[in-house]
Length: 450
Image 1 (cartoon, rainbow, N blue to C red):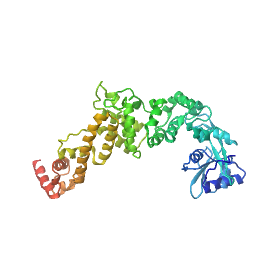
Image 2 (cartoon, helix red, strand yellow):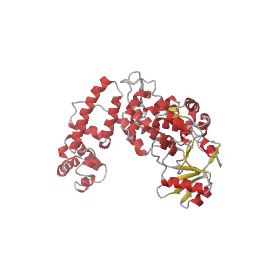
Image 3 (cartoon, one colour):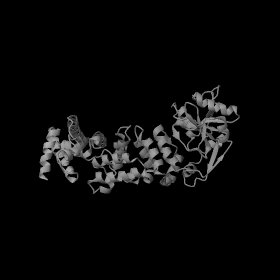
Image 4 (tube, rainbow, N blue to C red):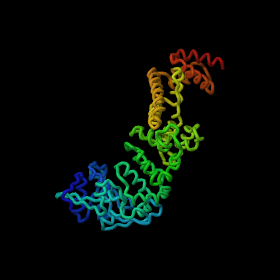
C-alpha cells in the first residue's frame, strides 16, 4: 500500500475495476495512464489489466467487444471506450515485432514483466481508502529520477520488439528523460533490427518526436544510438559534410538547427527543415553544393514515401525543398516578383519563407544578417502583390478556356492553351489587363496571329 500516493481515476473507469473485484477478479489500471497520472498529466486513455478471462469480462459488461487474440475486450462505459485485457505473457517474437505465442496468466507481475519500460510497467488499484500501487520494477523511482529504463534484460526487450528502441527515443525526447546506460547500450547493439520495422510504425514515432518544442534532441539521440543510420542513412550521411555558411559544424547539425526553428505545429515545415539539405552529401564538390535543392527534393520524396507519409505531405515537403534556394535582387520588377509567386505557388509562399527563415537561423550570423534583410524585402513585395489581387495562375484570369472557345471561336485543342498562356504572361507583366473585355480583345489578336 502507498499511504502517501493517490491517483485520480475517472469514476466510470474506477467503476469497471470495482465491478471486476466484486466478481472475484483482480483488476488494476495499468501502463501509460498510471505513468501519466504520476507525472501530473491527464491520461488520454485508461487501460485495465485483469485476471478475468475475456469471456468473463464480456459476461460482466454487456456493452463490450472482444477485439483480438491478445485478450483485449473493449468496454463502452458511456463516457469512453476502455480496453480491459486479461493478464498475459508473450513469447516467440519471430519478426521482432509481434509475439507468435500469447498465454493468459493469473499473475499481474508476470503481465507487467512483458512491458517495455519500467515507467510503463506499473499498476494502480483505485479504492475508497486511496488505492494500491504495484510497481515491481521501480518505475515510480525512475520517473522521479527522470530515467528511462527497460524492464528486465533490455537486450531481450528490444529483440522481442524492435519498435521499442524508437519508443525509447520518443519517450526520452517528449518527457525529458535520460536513457539508462545499459538500456542505451542495448539499443546500440540491436539497432540493426530497426530495419525490420514498417514505414508506418517509424512514421508514427517520428511524428511525435517532431511535435516536441526541440525535436533536434530526438534526432541527435537517434544518431548517437545508431538508429538513424538504419532508418535514414541519407540524413546520417550529412554528418562530416562541411556546412559552407555554418554556425553548425556540418550539414547534419545545420539541418537540426533549421528543424528547431520551424513552427512546432507544422509537420510539413518540420519535415522540410529536417531534410532540406539532404541533397548536399551527393552534390558537394569541395566548396559548393550545386543543385542540392533538386537532388534533395528527390531524396526527401523517397525517404517520406519509405516512411509512408501521405502523398500530399510528400508533395508539399519535396516542393518546399526543391524551391528553398530562391534568390532575390532589389532590382526585380513587379512582374519578376509575380513570376516568382507563380513559380513557387501562391499556396506555398508562406511556408517557403518560413523554411528560409529557419534555414538562415542555422547559418553564419554575419552572412545571415544580409540574407534576412533581403528575404524580408522580398516578403514585403510579395505581400504587396498578393494584396493587389494579381493573377498568379491561369485560373485567376478574368476569362476561361470556355470563353476562348465560345466567344473567340478558337476550336478545342492546343490553340486554346496557347491563347490562355499568352494572356497570362501579359497579365503578369501588367495586372491592370486582367479585365474580361480587355482580355477578350487581346485574345482575338492572339488567335488571329495563329
